[in-house]
Amino acid sequence: MKRQSIFWPLLCVCIAASCSSMAYAFTMHSLTSSTLILTQGSGGPIGDERLPAGWKRHQLDGGNGSSISVLLPGEPENFPGGQFKVAPNVSLPVHLYMVSENAKLYFVMFIDLPKPSENMTDAERGDIFYSCWRGVAMRVSQSLEERFGGTFDIGSGQQGVQVSQGRERRMQDFRVGSQRGRAQVVLANRRAYMLVAVWNSDPASESDALRFLNSFQVKIERT
Image (cartoon, rainbow, N blue to C red; front, side, top):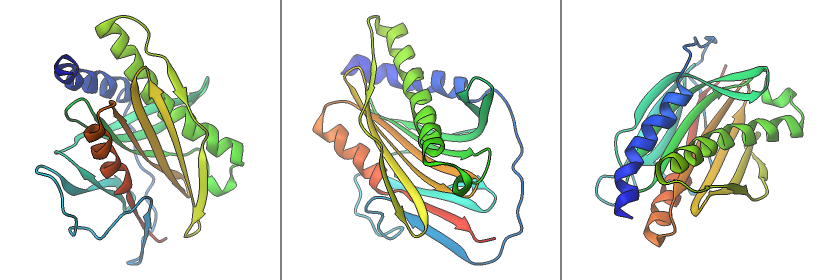
């Protein structure tokens, strides 16, 4: 466990480097003062949580007047200008934030979609979600293999899908070797708002990961 904890920040940097290869600009929309707040998980009012030491709620900017509000155990590193390759000739811009803490990884991502999610088929939305979280999982797997040797294979369960407040949310559990993971996404217009957590089998580690995942809130300026 100690060995893995020392390695985790190095892994975090390697993943960030693989996701931050190209700069891009957001397309600005006209905004009004009204906003839409979407909550996935238990949510809870901002600033009203009873939290362990070091944890607090962060409002992370995604551009275009949108943000993700989430509980984290430390200040996230900010990696704008990345790309997710979701098909041989298709890459999607991504703005990534991440925190590594005690053998746990927390990712917050704003992913620009090729067209409005409402105009995609169910299969297209599912494939983009799967490709994006699996890209993170593959980099985790590769880094673990380079560091420790052996094989850290990736497995996953079924995607869960629900529609709430007129927006689609998806969730999928996965594993990287013995590490556990979960990805969650809210799809709205031409953007995917995504969280990914990776943790170990320690119950306290799972509790921290679920605190992060269940605090997921998205703020979108109405156009």
